[in-house]
Image 1 (cartoon, rainbow, N blue to C red):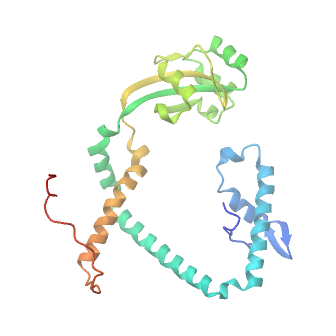
Image 2 (cartoon, rainbow, N blue to C red):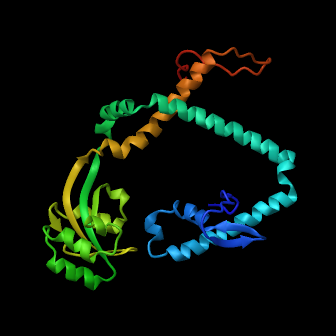
Image 3 (spheres, rainbow, N blue to C red):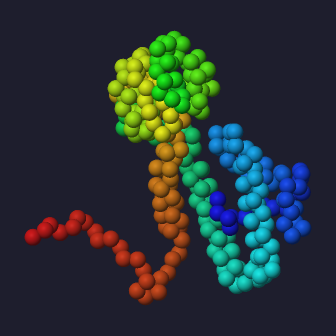
Length: 268
């Protein structure tokens, strides 16, 4: 977040964690910013991150105070930019409203059914145990079986998937780092790779649960992408409709040039 993206300050809820020229910053403001950071990035670092957020809020408060001193909000440039931003936000909300109305869950589901075969890709379903050293990884391989692998991941892994028994779900080759993908895609289904994999995250013990050369991702995984793909069609259709129903006149020479009718002439 940019320094100049100002947070909503001035909330008196909670303990005061800093003051800037007499203006308070509360713990509630810090909590609000902390809530916007993914939990996995906060884990084991919350105290440090809170200090960083407090300092960011201090800088934001200083900028707010300087804005008042300079009377920026009275400048015509400020008013012009504010009006332009107001129009853009309103336009964005209108377009989003039209997209949401057109692309209902039923419409998206129908589009998914019509295109899902085209979305198939080679995929692997796997679990892993992530540890810090090669020795640890090799020790785990000596005792790991498909039956106890999930429990080993819960007990030994230091990765974020440990609470899910090391589950990674289905993934395509490109979604994993090359070293990991190479082992996952070359290991037979239902087996554990006999060699640990080193990546920038540590050492991995990999178990491949299943493989599918034509894996079709479920609707829930592609719904957002599908909506994005179809949104442009909806927007273009909406713009065409309101243009058709509007009375538009152009000054001489200002009208858009209509595309030429018929196919282009054959090359000589």
